[in-house]
Image (cartoon, rainbow over all chains, first blue to last red):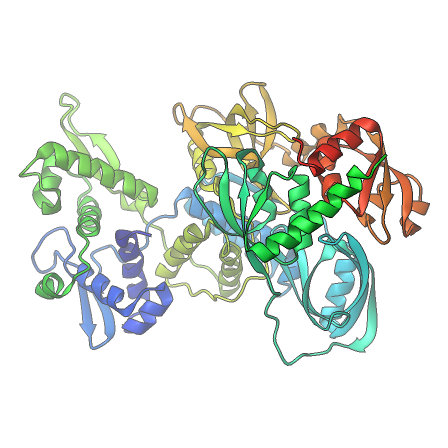
Length: 303
Length: 323
């Protein structure tokens, strides 16, 4: 965001948060204290003229900031089309997936959306198609979360392409990357794991109460891997957890992705016709290459 | 304050100062200002040195403001003089009116905006939140449990749809190795699962089509004039996906699976015994080979295709990198 946009955000905020301290403002906007002082000083010399009453009146008393007269800049500017569309899409996502926030009433989501549409009627048409996941697995997992009980299920691990029995203590359901996931303590593996709901089958609610480990859920151990992806396969990045991507060149791009298991990356490489390459780290790349070689042998041996 | 600002502040930003002063000036009169009047009042344009350079700077600032959602209104005050264009910011269009959200609505908005936190659209969502905060609403910043998947092209598409401008892009169809140029009147965007789609009138085929944004190569470009078409009302977007799949024939493919492998393929078998099978061979019915062949390649060595020969050949070529 540019400096003038920061300033246009700050002035209305100061109106609704009188007497805020410099560190409070800095924390809220993600700026340094020096930046806050710079912006306050810049506001103080801004206005349609140079005389008293023609400049924004902002006081810096110690480290407290008070906006006395914002000269009309103390009201935020209208949403642009993208901002309004993002709000409406987020609200639509919530309407379609009420199970994630059972405390939020659907009517409130609709009325909030209607108020946004009222102020900006020309918002582009945006839709969220419902997640068709009213599966038994999801329902039983929700019951387990409500009653603090464990569940067992068979889980298809995409990376290894193996189906395995698991017993877990559910922690929370999250919806990310278009998939509903369960973060849980896995008793089978004795650690925190994330499970994609649609890959669970034979889900059963157990009598045992959930186990509450000392460590809180902190995600799993991912490795950052650098890969090269040719231009015509860029769509494959959508299914990957991309940390950063380089500039698009004639032969494709280099990207850093977050990977849990080498077998998962080996599958992506095989489906790409081995055109996605691992650039590093070397040890991880070697493991991936071994798995790719095993897959290649299965077809070389075919009669 | 002015002295302190000029003496102490090493981070002075002339451009920001100029744009802020421009915004304030353009809001201060309903009649608006001509360029000359603007340049007289805002010294940052340096018009006394070079009027043309100042004009270029002014046009760039207008574009900046447009990008930030602030539309500068231009009108011809004197019908007989082309020089008499006046510029102004109309408060009614430019400013966000007070919106009275209930606490429950604000909490729904918090979740809606939080859904974009890990996406490329994050900064637009933050900007929207800051504007709502500027009206006095307070938002929580808890970790989201509902997260959208973002897309690099989404912002330009939303912009094109809002001004009804045609777009062009390179699109790689499943099964193709080279992208083809497409022209579209975009009607809307939708997200299904984690994937974004744009739908509209495909100008080359003169029919409505859906495009998966992850298969767009390079950037979407707008062309032509604004308000170039009408968006049909009451379009059932769910039907847009149907024709592509129903036209495809099913292909019988024989697979060999290793122990406990191939769970997703076994469910596609017409033989119910395949579901119980630990390891062995079975037939399965595949609807869209272009989509399934890369998945079969990915499943090796736990799953190996045995027949028909042309499918074996295509999967083998992918696995061995002969594409």
